[in-house]
Image (cartoon, rainbow over all chains, first blue to last red; front, side, top):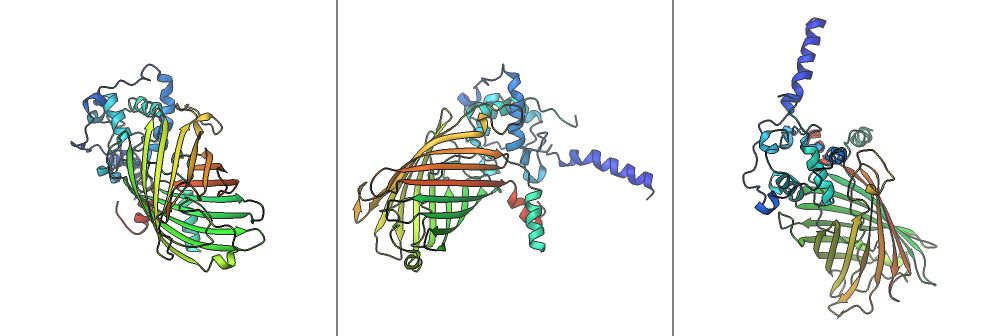
Length: 134
Length: 288
């Protein structure tokens, strides 16, 4: 392999690796549903976008181990791709309930140890996640 | 040499996790270790006893592992050093906490089961049960007296308005001695000092601190149940997340009756390794 073709190969690998690692085939657990009253809750921080940066910090510390830094979900962890419409179409209240309760059957821990406002900060940040490979 | 390199590598490559840990030292709440994470904690109990008794220092190491989202296992290795006496290894204990309910509720129960293989020189006083520790005898006499003890706890815990309220009821049976079944309790309330996180990186801002108070003591045994003739303490508790994966805890406990030591100082440093289980599995050839 010439130096040029080796470089081309390396570039292809670098470009494709994030796409292959992304859990775009994620299928949500149909039994993991928020109660109606929880799903209808509105994010009390929705009009405070300046708190999104704190949400990002919390996400990187608590969630990125499984969901990756860009929220795309690590395949070997069976973690949800948080960029997918199937996640982003859920209400703030639903996502807050899921962060609070976790889903032990799928290995998602509860994050109720975080203060309520911090969990809402995480939801603020989740809304900023955009697909890396649209 | 290879083991040492692996050990260093393990700490070097570990990702950070949020060390937003509970400040409690004695009381357990319903928040379990995250699955696959390992927390290593170095703690100590320092006693300032009444006149005529020797001051002691009881260090212990905890290895806490999240087996699943609802099951946490923990191993303790314990020692003790008494001024003017000796330093001894006092034994080990292995505990498991199970959370029977999947979802968060107003009150969340956790079942706790522990086996202890310690000797009578053990002083960590992680919980007070029965009449509490006997600090009047020398280590030489105490280390030869073995205790094989089974301990259970009912942990009830609730998160309300950013406060965590927790209560533990302890039932213990020492199979090596005829002490009957011993009882104890601990109650705790804690809260983070800030409930919103800033976007900047800071170590001394309020979001990294939490504080609270614990009350704990013995409740006697089946030979005599009650609050009398047992030790009781009230202890403010403080925790500081010194880095993204490490927490310092401090708790000065004040003895509430004549059976208690006047002061019990407790301090600890914990370090959390995220994804420890996955890394170990991959080291042994697991694909995922």
